Image (cartoon, rainbow, N blue to C red; front, side, top):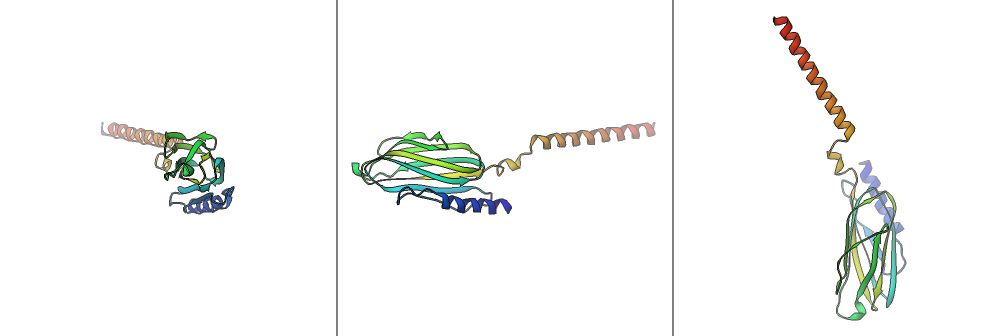
Length: 178
């Protein structure tokens, strides 16, 4: 319960901290899932002609993040958006496709809780737009099912101790029977 409340608080902080460099730039996150995971959307519309840089600053808890971004294609050069680079905390998103619709993605990026930055750079014909998603699987949610090495060692010591007791009892039983 405590982690859900903490994740929800972080989601609200992310909304408040989202950069508002242009009036059409947006970023929003859904409420945290039961395991603390987050999903959000970001984008920009009505991007003017020429080069642009959109910077999104927000907070995330520790976990594994993924991101996708796509330019929205409508016929006509004035609406076209070409990404020159898209980075999440300095890590470049992979180019999946480039053409009428630019697609970029990134999966499995370890995130240390705290301030994060997503930077989208590109050019627009005159009235371009893009949108994307961010997702975060909270660390420990998936790992909680597997014991840590110290737990394994303690469990093995317990089995060894139980085996030693069983052998000692068998010896004692065999000695009294003889």
